[in-house]
Amino acid sequence: MTVSLVDARRPPSLTLDGVSVHYGAQVAIQGASLTVASGELMALVGPSGCGKTSLLCAINRMADEQPGCRVGGTVRLGDDDVAGLGVTALRRQVGMVFQQPNPFPLSVIDNLRFPLSEHGVPRRQRDALAERALRDVGLWDEVKDRLGQSALALSGGQQQRLCIARALVLAPRVLLLDEPCSALDPVSSRVVEDMIASLKGRYTLLMVTHNLAQARRLADTVTVCWVEGECGCVVESNTCEQVFKAPAHPITAAYCGGEVG
Amino acid sequence: MHRRDRWIAVAGVVPWLLVVVPLVMMLGALWQQGYQGLSLAFLLEDPRAAGRAGGIASLLLSTGWILAVCLAVAVPVGLGCALYLSEEVPPGSPAARRLGFVLDLLAATPSVVFGLFGYQFFAITLGLGFSILSGGLALSLMVLPLMIRSAEQALRGVPGSYRRAARALALSRWGWVRRVLLPGAASGIAVGVILSVGRALAETAVLLFTAGYVLRRPDSVFDSGRALSVHIYDLAMNVPGGTARAATTALVLMAVLIAINLLIRRALRRPVLAGVPR
Image 1 (cartoon, each protein chain N blue to C red):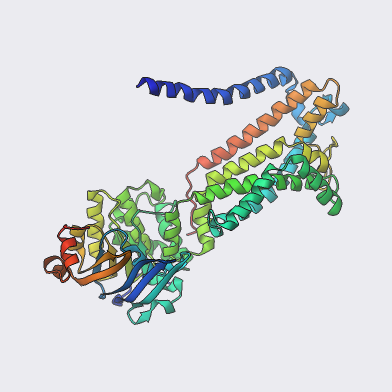
Image 2: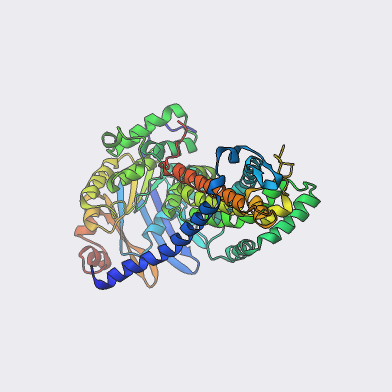
């Protein structure tokens, strides 16, 4: 299987319909429905424990691999139900970046070559793809002279951008971002934020964040999750402007107004 | 510094002294008794007159072969078991408890029992006789629990965030293990190897039952051979006037142990950057 340098197709939309995630008897989130339009960035906001990360893991089916976890409902990439896709094919299309930067204990360049070699990308293409991914996240100029050095020697912000580059190097079409800036200082956070903004249009993006100002700056649409009883749920999904200026649900108004949460 | 903190600092030195002083005393006693016998000829000549004369060349050779057989079996098998435990058996699960019980039982088994079993199984049942191979295999059984436990702890210590990243990238299990997990756990695994080497080099009972104690150079792994530890025991207990030579041999054994320890530690000082083929 090869990866082309440029995927000219529009990224697919991402649709969740009545998605529930159960861990044994515990319900992390119930009946979540939302749609991220092609090339848009949706921010997923809400208090801790309302099932945001579980929802992300249901999309790329990482939740399936957790013992005792059951996922209900339907997740579609464009017209394709992800349940019908193989896990490898699905995760090639849907990249994921985590809260804590987690580069592998390899050199900077090997962090990018490694996934490519694992997915059978020919050697002659690997370095060009790696360079492109590093340029995409604005890291190339900072690391081009130390590609052979340990990725663990980079700063936190650089490590997180490297992790985003590692996800992008496999040419996904959807990117799931689980609080990508929360472990970073304000300056690094701003750099990563600007970089994420630059990805809009080329990727369909779903980003979990606790930072409402960040959601406001970056997102095209916002979905608000909440905990009712002991179970997470979606209370509102709308355009960013609508959610922050004219929320349709009282919980959204209270949460975005800083009264609760 | 608070007065209480000063006491804690002083109290921290005491355990160190309890460890270091006996070691220095032991090395000092060995040196005092055995340094006069140390020479290049002692290392290069074979023993004569039951070890009263000559050197320990054939014993170094036998010990090296026994250790090589032991590690050739114990490291891959131990690593394989540790990988299974760390990757497939959740900590605290019934399976983990059962396997842990078996490993702890094996680790606590007296070495003479391994010796008896090794003699019965390797020497008699498999027909390997008193040989380097019997000795190495019996030793490998003895050090396996140590190797498995150390490697398992090291593998479980690799951050879970690497695993999540590998799963999100749909990396193969083999790629994950080879490129991330093993390099990440290398220092802990090496500690297991060092401890195993130490235990194997120091072992006498197992080798008396399995490798034999002839003094000549072994021609192959099917030949009998005497390890340094067995030689020390024999000189000290069975050879009149052999105590000084036993101390000299013990000094060499300690030097070998320290050299192996330093070599492994030095190899690990290199940054863990497992290069991916371009």
